Image (cartoon, rainbow, N blue to C red; front, side, top):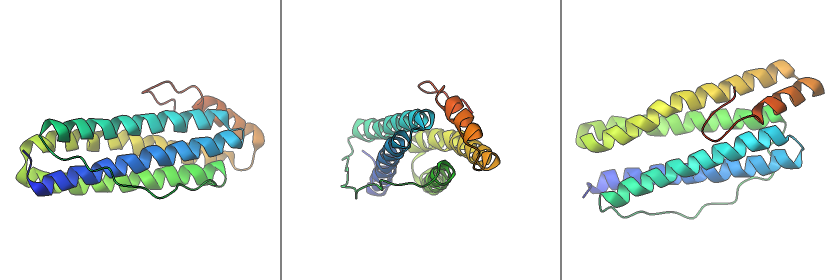
Length: 167
């Protein structure tokens, strides 16, 4: 059984992943409504990836005879602005997630070597999550208000397959 503090920490990470999956799903629906179907697909797949992260943490906690707590969430926004503004929010959120995993790592490395392994894996993955988001933001900045450039980026993001980023 995990120490109570470690169990609370894992539940906090579960909640962050829960928020992530619903946030990206809301963003996907918004982009779809705006006819950026490639961006919508990219965000939907990102939502699925975050859901899988949440499930991995739930399985870990359950496997350690821990109590999983899934908290109620507030509604997600329905408007995220321009594609650039939307992906800036994605980048900000990924930076928030990275910071949460950094704090978790700093704590568990002192008290629970097994939990360090799983937190370290997630922290390692955050390198790619932030890099992808930053690249998309930078490309959207380059595109500016050019409809053709935005549609090219949209098309490219729509080529993402499960588990693989295009950009």
